Image (cartoon, rainbow, N blue to C red; front, side, top):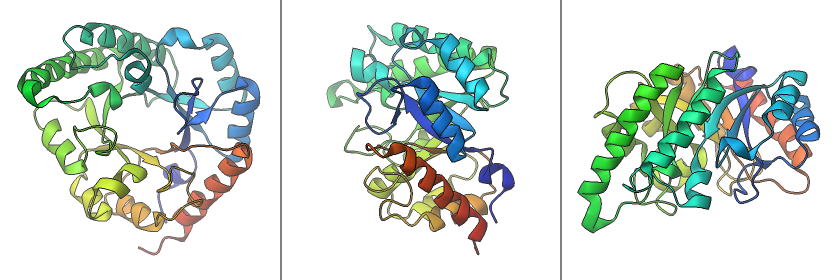
Length: 280
C-alpha cells in the first residue's frame, strides 16, 4: 500500500484561470470549480499564473478555505507562453525573477507547510550558437531564485519537459546532472508521467535512479487526459514511487472536456484505488 499521506492529503490538481494552457483544469467559476475539486476528494491545488495580478486573491483564498483546499504550488510557464519571458534571456530574466518573487511572497503567506515554485517552460530554449552564454544566465538566475526561496521558505522545482516542447532538460537523468551544479536543498525535480512516456525508455528505472532528487510528481495519461482515461500503466509509476519511499505530492495536470467534474471524480478514485491495491 502506498503511504497514507499520498493516498489522501497529497493528491492534488493543477488549475489555471488562463485557457491558453489547455492541459490544466480551467477555472471558469472559482467557487463552483473549487467546490467540485474538493468534492472529488482533492486536498491540494497547483496554480499556473502569468503574474500574481491575474487572479482575485481574496476570492480565491476565501474559497480555498471554504472547501478545505491548500494552495501548495505556483507554476510559472505562462510567463513564457504569453509574454515570452525566460530565465536565460539577458533582457528579460530580471522581470521573470521579479514576478517569481511575488509568487513566493504569496505562498509565504499561506499556512501550509509545503510551498513550491515550478520552473519548467520558463527556463527557456537553448540556441546552439549561444548555448554557453544562455546557460550561464540561467545558472545565475536559478542561484538568485534559490536565495529567494530560502528567504521565503519555498522549494523550487525544476520540471522535466519532453523534447517536443523544449530542447533543454528532456529526461530525468539530464535533470539530475543539471541539479548537481547547485548546492543546498531548495531545488529538486518535478517529474511528469506524460513527459516520461515520451522521453524515458524506462520510466520505472528513471524514477528509481532519481530517488534523492524527486520532489514533486505530475500525473496525466499519454494523451494528456486524466489517469484512467488513457493507456499508461500507473501501477508501475506508483510502485516506483513506493520503492523510493516518495511521500510528496501527486498532482493531476490534465486536459479537460465538458465533463470535467465527472472526469476528476473518476480519476481521483482511479489513483486512490490503485495506491491501495499495489502488490509491489
